[in-house]
Image 1 (tube, rainbow, N blue to C red):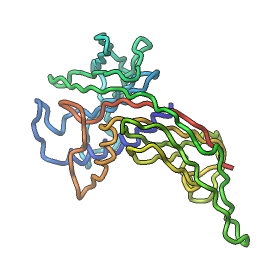
Image 2: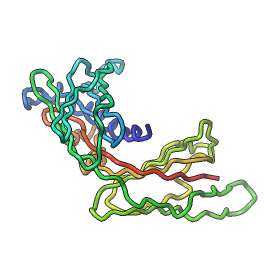
Image 3: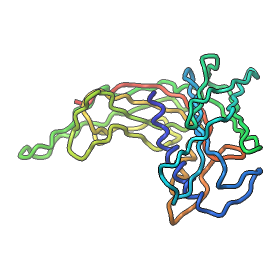
Image 4: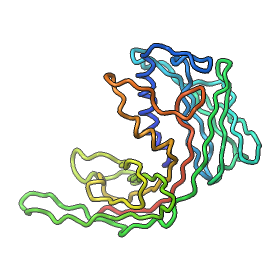
Length: 267
């Protein structure tokens, strides 16, 4: 599922959590900073609810150490008041069955017990993007072969959508060919993603593409808590800060996303 690629930012969140794990433990809600579980959950309408629970690892720990926390009872409460228990898949991954149907514009609550403390969070799944359109469905990559002078650059593809409520959006572009051909050496980047913005348009130039063939262009509507992950991704070994979280008693992110998709051909 293409929306899983949004976990790129979750990886940055986990790295930030590694850095904070080097700090002096601070007791909060009965669990020390070094022991807090890290939650990754992105609820998308019509898709299986998946929750990943990992543990922080100090930066000097053995990289082979397993991060997943299994054996938990992960509960999801729907707006109807019905509570669903997710199935433990091992290594910290928990999945819902078909009885839990994620819907747009509804609030979901997540909770589980960890070391005698209840960890919880809630999120609303946003409505789907509206009127997502592209000014063209193909773009011709310029030829940079020697002896031909300066190539003619194609006009960018203008992506537009409706944004009457000031919501955050980001664009993800994925090449979906089974054996894609690179447009140039050193440009092997099968996925491009923009920064989240409160906007209703985005321009894709030929420089945003690394391969010929068919590309899936996904417009994600995201919640402010997800956009906050991008604001907090400047952690480094010289700048240790606690990453943004909306998890009470833990770390990580529990959020809703929604999307629409167009296709673009690179020739």
